[in-house]
Amino acid sequence: MASEFELIARHFTPATPGPQAGVAFGVGDDCAMLAPRPGLRLAVSVDTSVANVHFPADAPPEAIGYRALAVSLSDLAAMGAEPRWCLMALALNEDDDAWLAEFARGFHGLCRTSGTALVGGDVTRGELAIGVTVMGEVPPDLALSRAGARRGDVLAVTGALGGGAGGLVLWRRGERDLAHPLLARYLMPQPRLAAGLALRDLAHAAIDISDGLLADLEHLLAASRLGARLEADALPLAEGLVEALGGEEAHRAALSGGDDYELLVSLPATALDEATRRLAGLGLSLTPIGVTSTERGVAGVALDGHHGWQHFQGGGE
Image (cartoon, one colour):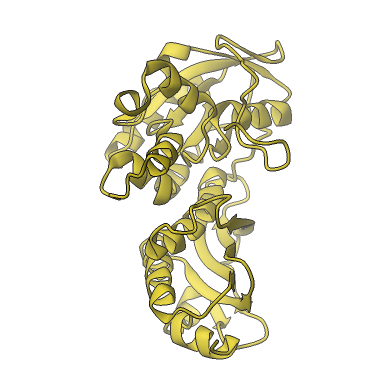
């Protein structure tokens, strides 16, 4: 197996971003040295993606690289933060240069399109796993959190739901064409960065939907000390979901399936039209699905015990 330093030099040392990107020192030093822009706060998040837990080990390596960064960037989107830098720690059980080249292609491709500079990390031997830390900037008075929702807010979601869970079902059935809309949503989710920026001065609170709508809604409501009433028939379903799963399972996937990486936002009713207009300009829908209330819990949907993915409790599958 090639040394850690050879692998980093070959696959994970991009062109030096330079001072204009806020990078004094990047890949190749013991630490990265970064310079956030004056007046902005640093938003930081980390996610670990483990083979056959978060993604199939035999998925296309380009998709694995892309996905590992995308799921972390989704957290920045939920905070209304603009991505700037990332760190990546990769564990591999063998040195497969062709696999690494495709993995790096997916990772670096999303770095470029999202404006994120890879500034350091680590490569080690072990079972396939990728840890990605992302850092972004946000004005302190515009940062979104889970705790800001207010009574009577409209709850709305970007895009459509259930596609991640539907894609996983199709993968298990043997579908391998990433052009399929459900498989694309599962393996190559789109972090809603532009939506987070567009809504951060309108929304009171936000969270990204990674563990399932109900699970993540409950996180937001707990932080805001509120309850909610959902309109079950209002849930926007991903393209092809009903055809793939049937109506009942499609609805369950939208509520509890996870891996959607859409944004759930809580915003005043007076801001809904403007929020919808802004996202339409980005080619993205915003669908109201309920309202917050002072009565704790979630009303309006059947709760069958499957509230989303939980690593140490068996999850929602």
